[in-house]
Image (cartoon, rainbow, N blue to C red):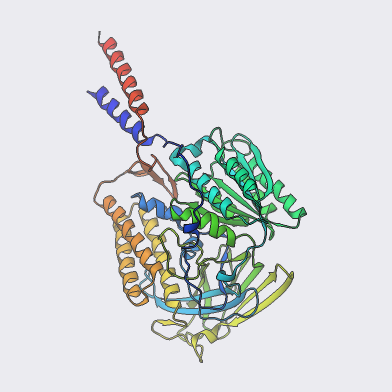
Length: 567
């Protein structure tokens, strides 16, 4: 009987965990109907929002929830979450590439049930997304073709995105294609996209990619930056587009060495976009590569392909400002607490400072979206929580400053904002809820939701599912109450996602979950600490009978062996 059970279990595992069919038949890569229908509401403000580098979406966080599971806190980053929200700031242009403003918000914290004071550091550009024209760019594609890219059709999704990208290239753009597995190979040297023949050559090179071998990320990136050096000689912008599941298995596999390549070789003219593919993506490595000198997206299917490979790559081709230094001085009654949205905030004497290597024009011009997975490009949001030293609530003495370099003129630009001017004439923060601008109501809610979701996931990691559910229910109720007044599509999408997460937590809380003192297993997905490793493919059972035949033969062998032992 045990043997038969083993056979049935083996059949199930092979049927559910096998890789999907990598062949997808003929493709129609001209997806121009989708390119223009994303966020196409005209911007009513002067200029547009800006985005800092780093993680640009919550794609992996969202995909884990959609799969019925619970994401680790590390899959939800502040910049990724805020970038999927559009904020229509009331500030006009300062007639500089980058303009410094600020907003004050005071409201109830979902975590403490007490009031929270927040300063939002607002950077806005005179570059209007609807008028944005990308300069001629060299796109250097570095794609992982190792054996792991076969599973879950990861390589197929990546190839679909690259075909869309080729279709969107302008005649004065150039493309190079590098593939890597055991070693790196340059399949296409820098080629102008100036005609049907050249684009056909690009499409053919992409279509020829097949998965096999191990993953030599170091060699792939090294070759890409070597190609980018030619772009510098030709006085052109270069954007390296790095696609991988991010798991180095050959060559130099030390992740710090891989990250150092990006840190040392990127500049204001050579930038790196990392695109993670698949549930088993090495999220931390891809994120660190982005932090070192670029940005990171998680590749989802459907409309997100166009958004990432066409629209977002356009806007991240070159920075609108570089070497940005932001400083906040302490005031009479308030000092700077922790910062949210800044990758590197350094506290100092009641204030703090941050350095941002570069900022880019954000692509979205409205909170309206065609699809919940096409929310990228809203712009970064940077917050500093203000802590009161006494009962005066006086913002006097707090000064916010910014200095950056104009990449065209290569000259420094200095701006400052007196924080007390953000709280009305007397600079006193009211006792009750207060928002210096109407849009700060949405900003403050975004901050609250991010902090609460981080805590929900952390409680789940610590096996406190009842506490996670309780906080998540309170968060959803609060978001619905605020959004009843805002009627904002971004927040509506947040609420929908939180309800799905609540449903997933419900299954856990209803005892369909087993935990011991160290490890947790849920739906074949393994969680330990803040690292998430994924089990079977979510693409469904593989077509074909090979797994069943293999399981049947193994089962017969086991039965024959047992019969011989019984004789």
